[in-house]
Length: 181
Image 1 (cartoon, rainbow, N blue to C red):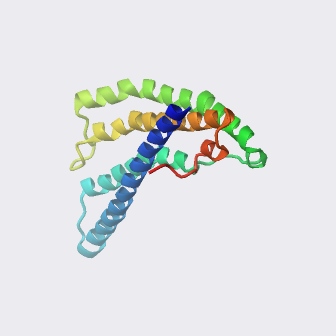
Image 2: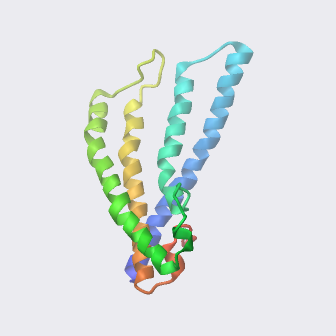
Image 3: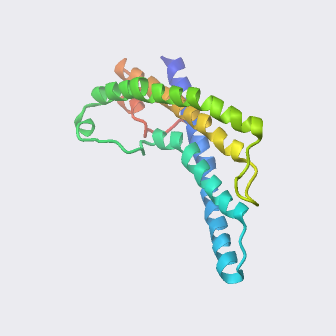
């Protein structure tokens, strides 16, 4: 049981660290967007690469922040029944959701995106726009990375739920419980 709790904590630290690091990309995105607007309207200047960089940053924040959001129970869900359940029933729902819904979806995305990303890397795919960024293959690489991060966070949640069902602390099953630092 202790090994499972340590593994869950380590996986949660990964999601936490990724989310906190990616949060800084939002600052970069805001500053770059501000710069794009100022250059366009004050100086009549603009570059496709700068606009694409905002899009890339937005994609990175959204995709790399998904596991962090899952960790903190921030994804949309219908809580009509869940919020009325006791800790053990919630743990059972969390375990079933991670095993039956999240894991198969993440595994499918990993499997189905592999060739797509590999083809992009083989071409060193770049922007279709003249003057655009040449790193589309890096952007597409975020697809399997996102699936892997979500899968790992789902494993952490499944472990916490299983521990709660086996008699561990009820708070361990809830994804918004604070990580061990």
